Length: 312
Image (cartoon, rainbow, N blue to C red; front, side, top):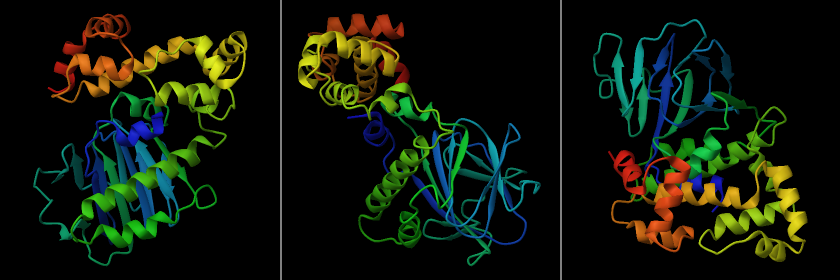
């Protein structure tokens, strides 16, 4: 499992928040929700994202914008429109005076706003949590980025718009999968952009030698990997692999493997019924004691302490 797969398959909330919003006239929202990752698409009209650092991003039909939490920002019909609504964590929507607005502004199934057939339609999908594996990529994203129609394939947006207001059996699972595909498409397109700054290990995945070694470790963390064994698997010498891996990834293979195993263990420990021994088996440590020693060395706390904090 690489980090992009981990972004979607790790310990995140299934049934990610998804909404179609419809607006007419001047409008603006103050976004305080601090969701780790939010995608915004605009099938109709124009939306402006004004970040707290002053950056302004227009989002037009065919564009896709992605914001990274926990930063705050405004979304509205124009950069200078003052917000009248605040969006708080937990999908709590209030007026500036504290009046709840979730019900009063409802327009039907997963539809919300001030006009059923507004001049502007905005689709919003927010991921509520990510694990350590997913955070490896999220941390590399800017606070907000936009992809224009010439930079990505937006074919999924019309499908999402068509499905979001349906209330069929299994609809939440359908929407989850569409949103996941949308996010994968967007992140791939963004990290391929020259202005993007993906982690070195992400770029290294395209290298025929180092990329293969990375996938072997990521997909099979429980294997007793050594540099010599990895080198044999990718048909190069031990010295060549060690040198090339360090050049492209920025750290030696075994250092990367340790951090990957500990991040994966940290995610698995969020599952309350999973024992430390079972986690140790899945991430390549011979015993709970061995995992605990490695976990403390890397993170400064024990697996049990991490579990208590992560599940609080």
